[in-house]
Image (cartoon, rainbow, N blue to C red; front, top):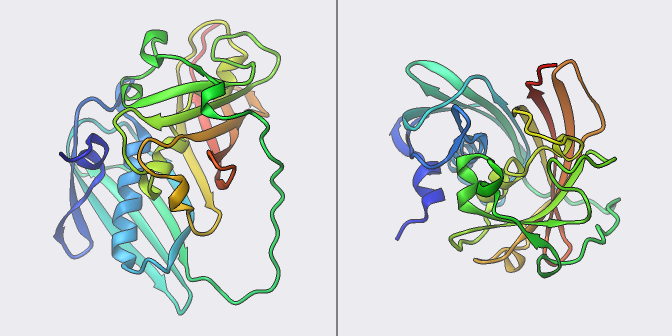
Amino acid sequence: MTHPFDLTTTPSPAGPGVYTLNLLPGWGQGRALFGGVLAAAATRGMTETVGDPARRLRSLTVHFCEPAAPGEAELHIETPRAGRYVSHLTAKVLQAGRVTTFASATFGLDRDAVMAHLDAPAHGLGGPEDALEVPMGGLGFPEFTQHIQYRFAGQSVPYGGGALAEVNLWMRLAQPRALDLPALVALLDAGPPALLSRATGPIPMSSMDLRVQLNGALPEEELGAGRSVLLTSRCRWAGSGYADQDSALWSEGGTLLARCQQALAFFQRG
């Protein structure tokens, strides 16, 4: 049986640079479709267009331009430049002729280089077995959260009224599936906004864009079916209805998989 995530994020070729998507119900986020599945679909389409597993995704930027809805959509892929080592691609998801999502990505081959550096202290939050499982649907969170199991690590939780605007949580797909690149991209957008840990009641929020940096080859042996990843997120500024967020995604084995910066909008009336 095909996994629900694959059913709604796998593009079907429809012509040169054009694919069709069947965006299924069950992945809602308020009045829109969950942006993570749109980002995942764009990632799939661009990766397929590159057609070279050695030319790995290095960075991805996704803009959520207007709400998408369940149903048919088109995915348009272009390659502005493909050089010896690096390829630059763009993707657009369209419904009724309107752009709902715009993405750009950089893919690159490994280079011969002596220097290497990693400034990423261990998160110190324990493993998923040490964290508190919370059924997100029971907290009034979006429809798409039914597809993900959430376990909160640390002291901060949404609507906890805490001093820090941060959220740390372990996530895995409710229906087991290996965590490949599209799944990881979706999970980077699947956590509750860090700012909500300062709140004491619901505040509608949505991602306007996200910018992902990948850290080399994925450790596939740490990302098999049923494995979890840890998302650590922190908001350092919010005001005038907007907020920023810095996140990191870790494997159970402690490997830093990706980093993400997001711009969010929130809707709070006095």
